[in-house]
Amino acid sequence: QVQLIESGGGLVQAGGSLRLSCAASGRTFGYYAMGWFRQAAGKEREFVASTTRNSIYYADSVKDRFSISRDNTKNTVYLQMNSLKPEDTAVYYCALGSGGGTYPNGYDYWGQGTQVTVSS
Image (cartoon, rainbow, N blue to C red; front, side):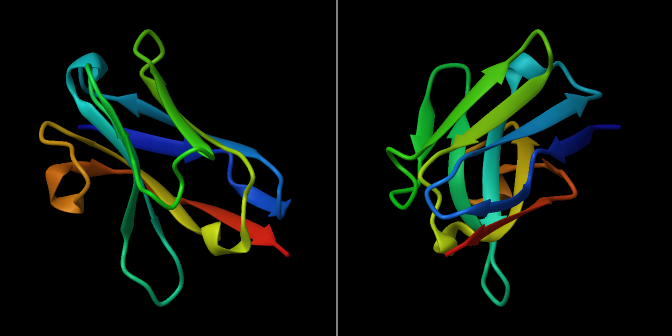
């Protein structure tokens, strides 16, 4: 059974930084796409960033501020978030899947989410 455990969320002032981590177990991590999505209150879940073995993608809203990386030796994917804005406030989810991409249906497994709150 695959488990994804996120950590690193919290409260930060606008302009600050946070690093989210997502540790995976139960799969050969390196062969799968990993993604980060977020869901703000009252809104649909939206794509943030993803990484496969050969490519990285970002949503336009976070490009140049966020950075996704993975350490296959630790089965962990990271999301470094800089220059945070109040509109980045959301629950952030990591996801693992064979399809990957920018839509939730490309992922088979999801973490429980971690809250990120950016105050103005």
